[in-house]
Length: 317
Image 1 (spheres, rainbow, N blue to C red):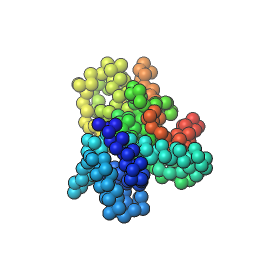
Image 2 (cartoon, helix red, strand yellow):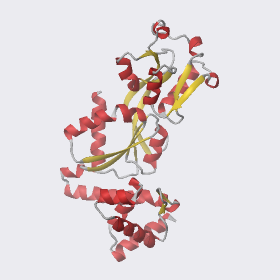
Image 3 (cartoon, one colour):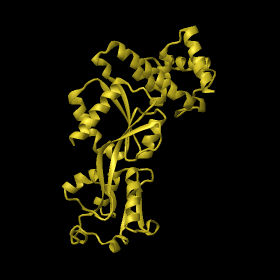
């Protein structure tokens, strides 16, 4: 079916001189989930955006977008067509870049999907680092858990992914950006200070836990740690499950319970002595944060520039 769409598209291009602006409008509406926002950022009127989408759907003979009063979502055909549309524009950019070979080709729009730890604790510093060296790149940041990151890169919703889970999908390139460690954090109370950095497992089993949600890289490593420590996960008293490490850290600060968390996410509270940390030398608590991109996607010069700077920034520590 999709081959027919692509053949139809090529025929439209050849016969009617169809413009890539239709594709840009389509991708804009998908990315911003709004006709009005797409019009704003593409510097077009909303009627023009609507006309582009309508013409594209008419020529392809399928409905690409499902409109409602609150949202705009991709139809089944739209989900299939979207990656090809992205590839068309990115191939155009790559071709023009190679022909022009101008430094300004490294500017533009870059979408990054990131899990909460790198999103909250690494990317803000990287952004400041990047702005000192490069100008002209607008970032669109999509935050989710590590599994969300993989899915967004796999389905062309983001050019670059940064997360705590290594994908086994052959279509995705994964490389280590930096190493992290999962530690147990507790409120800074006398009960925990008296342990002198050594937390008895028998006592740990009786603690109230705060956890991350399933799908996060932190939760994946935490599950492994708990198994190695022979903690019965189903018997633990879990008071709350949060979507971000920031919320977990704040809950522990407030005295709600204890939690396994990224050392990077805990650093500020540890420095301010609001929480304490415990390690368990007998278990493997190290983990990697990965850079991810789609092997079949034509990365824009701007994205290649960002990837190069990310590697530099993380290598410098």
